[in-house]
Length: 122
Image (cartoon, rainbow, N blue to C red; front, side):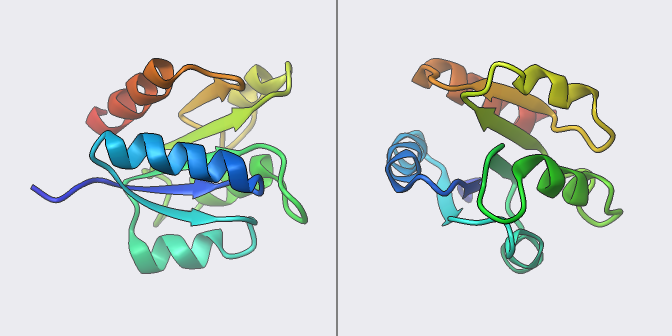
């Protein structure tokens, strides 16, 4: 069975390294981007099974990227989990083009893996 592909979009290199390590150790294939500008092109090219998206990115923020993914017919079914240290992250679930789930930073590894598994089964 092929490993599920997870696209990480986060401008914090340390966070990307930590997430990559956790996800590869859990059997996932990982691709990462440090900004949101190339997300849609990358989704079309690599066909990830899930996007792990930071809410705060340079240029275009995660909330806007999430809307672009969710309001596009070809990518609307792609699960998106948005991550943020911001206390208002839960509000994003009410927006048009909302993510499938949110993950408050700092998070524990079990919560991360559990949320990913729930979305990949859905």
